[in-house]
Image (cartoon, rainbow, N blue to C red; front, side):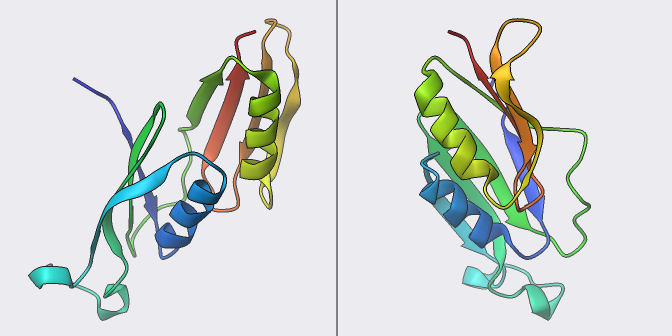
Length: 131
């Protein structure tokens, strides 16, 4: 058994995945578009948009798609745990660019170096360093 997140965007899935690739999280290793190979298209405006994408990197696996009826992302966050504070700081800076930082990076009351933000695509992230 494995639990993975599935992110729903309205029409910005491809841009979000490109951004996550640029940030160094990994890469898209599978993508299917609405209308490809006979895939159904209920709304013509969705033709060519991402129906299913698999994103993978070291310790990272999630799925994503465009959905014209997607609701804003809330109530869930990706958490990345690292053991290198400098690398985590760099990743935090790249991923949070253009987004909204809700907990700046710093030593928290429970002792971890931690920060939280919502990226420019509306996805919440928490980064935690265990050393």
